[in-house]
Amino acid sequence: MTKLALPPAAEKIMTMRRHTPEPFDPSDYDYFPPGEPVQPVGNRHDAKAPRKPKMAIEWFSAAADSALNEPVNPLIEDLLDEGALSVIYGDSGSGKTFAGLDMAFHVGAGLDWNGKKVKRRLVVYVAAEGGKRIKRRIAALKKRYHEEHGDDAPEPLFALVRYQIDLRSSDADLNNLLALVRDAETKTGKKCVWLIVDTLSRAMAGGDENSPVDMGRIVAAADRFRAETDAHFTYVHHTGKDTARGARGHFLLRAATDTEIETSASSLTLTKQRDGELGFQIGFELVDIVIGQDLNGLCVKSAVVEWKIGPMMAPASKKQKEPPRSLRMLISVVRQAITESESPPIRPFADGPLIKAVSDKIVRNRYYLRMAENAEPGEDPKKLADRQRQAFGDAVKAALKGEDLMACDRGGIRYLWIGKE
Image 1 (tube, rainbow, N blue to C red):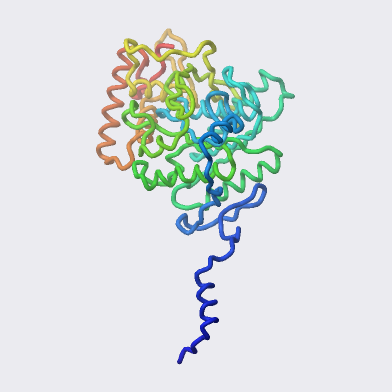
Image 2 (cartoon, one colour):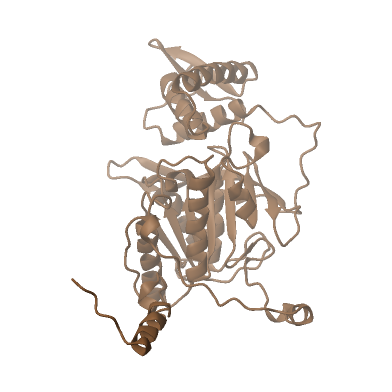
């Protein structure tokens, strides 16, 4: 078919149209004004980024003179700021979830946290590992709250999401989460100022924590949430095999983090603060609280954080040798297993008292699971199994020798219980 030639003037107009950008249409972008619902999208690579602020020049003196006119809004005074990114990390059993819940609860309830000012605002906690224990921990917080402030105390602005969220492979879960947060804001009439995702490894949805691509997507998801809500975003994360290296995974995460907080068996330490001072450290212990009875009439307990009131703790002296990590984890596993055990007490000695104990097999299985959670992504299963057996054997031997644990045999089953308290 012969193409008809256009007159010179018409050809010029058509050329201009082909090279003229289309007018801006907000519907072409994943930008959602406050209060408007978020529509789920498909694969991350098909999704378009949220609209960015307009690029502009700010001259030296003008930027300096306006510095105090743009104050940072603190979430927890001198610790966390609105709109920033933080990581709370530690070994399994170090209390990182308990510490994170306690801090989030104080913001939701508007209670000062260890002498640091807090305003009552909306917090959303994503329990990506799911499970029923998170509800028990919240029940323990609620019981202590009402015991200290009375039954008429204001309801904390605290919302729980139990979902194995995927923030790596697509934007669908992030969009749905944004929609849930906006719905919570509408119902409470309060702006969400803090989102906590516990844990980062679950949010990776099978990704490689050591991959810059996968970790980059995890950071990008946090960045997008912060950009669209102005809220603070926290990942609860694990340490690797070498605890001295901090949170495990690609260094890209730490580079992007504004605040980093480490939990150990007995303390919480500020290990990074992009625009503030380091040096904050405070001790704590986990205290069991009876929250009631279950449907079978059995006593149900959970724990809350009890902070050690007083001046900020100085870092531990190098001369004070801390127990090996394997031993600390073993004691934590035994204590938790005993607390959650429904088995009746045993009498280890003929003329001795009844003791709450737990079988060696239960402790072993829980210990292996803790080690698997802390394993480096991609570790060879056989090497992990060998490491689990060696670490468990060494830890039990050391615990019995130091009388941190006690043991006895009953019917061919070895039972363990806490020795020193």
